[in-house]
Image (tube, rainbow, N blue to C red):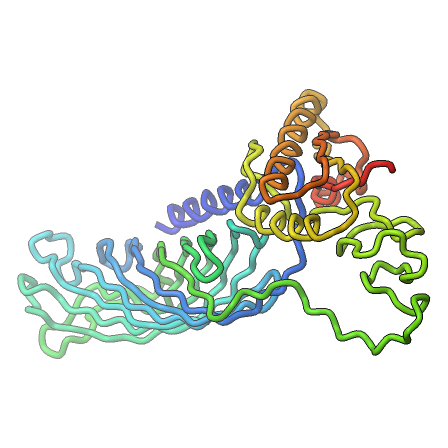
Length: 381
């Protein structure tokens, strides 16, 4: 049983890893600011281990949690699960029909590999559980029962999928270790266990449910209020681009842009603009970022032509370079179409550069992630 559970967890972990790598070309994580509390109801499917003397069962539960930072969530969970058992019947199927109920709670620590519309995670849970077991009416022990409290731990992998800012689907698969002794028989006089197996009980639990964050999703970090400016343009920098208003030839520069010595934008990297796997279809998270960029471009008075440049990482395979070049071109065109649909008046030109012009080391995953990017490049006068 344990081998089956570990195999299932290994497959789930591998699938999660593939999903985390799904965007194989470009995109990077934007600054993470969400720290909301949330509630998370769920339903469960329980696959019992052999020593449990049980059959598969179902259950439900709920959790209250908090987003700590970009990588960690912590939550308190409560659950109930029930399944049929064969306690007191030995190998005789006619004695099956007993019932076991599990009620418990855990404290979970979740580690997120990435935060986006699809967010895979690993989870470690520690807690306690009460097991209430009784034999079936057809057993020689006629419905005798036994209760036992124990410590449990759970290890697993899962993922969330964001449908809206305040509603996410969530599912995970977990290995559960239970310190309760397996009940192999029940005394017909007092209901005590006749014999026990002291091995750790092993079950697999699959949870499906949803997450409801409480409150509004945080947006951009609010800027600290500036000190009252002296009424001289040399002491003012209205657009906060590092060039005073006297010398700034391009007032109102977009936030996050690299500028020249006259305060005019040269290039701006669109962090977090990701695509569906092996596709030019924008993810929901990418669309939110482009919505903000489009609003700034519409409001920005500088209307020079802009090149939308797409770059990919170099995975070291020469046979994929032309493919990545073509894919980066299609993705650049997808960004151009989206920005135009949002009312951007600048002339936009899509250009895919493939693996050319890396900004980091392609020999590391961190470097390859930085090289997968989309940039807005303002063209000449």
